[in-house]
Image 1 (spheres, one colour):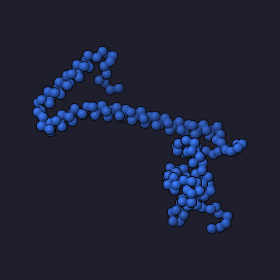
Image 2 (tube, rainbow, N blue to C red):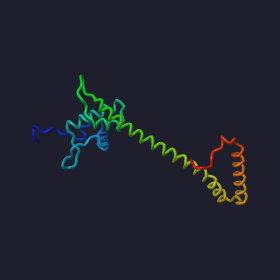
Image 3 (cartoon, rainbow, N blue to C red):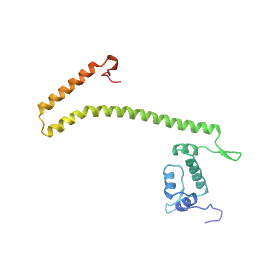
Length: 175
């Protein structure tokens, strides 16, 4: 290796230098946070820039930032300021906008999942009496007696619904 080329470290060497496990480095690579070079044998090799990037990731993680937030931060350069480096106001705004978009998308997914869950719970409630009937029939109970119990239960349910004040009744239509 020529003397002017940067030293390349293996996963194990880089992990030791950073004080983490090799699996941690591989995980960050899988998440797209770092892209090490590869040797002819396809081994990961890390240079000084990779180690600096890992160091930045590890510092941000230790401060409690999520990997999604870190991903957005790594897309923008730090600017030199007295005593270190910081993001510009413009960079902070871009990071905020990107994370806000992710949160909004997740909120929409959560709302969809809530609707799906509510629908699944309703369907389950509708199917449970059918399953109960079939299990009891298979256990040898009389079909006519079970059907009469179902009619009676349905009538009680209807009576209870009619007894509620108009404002307390749920509409039968789709919402």
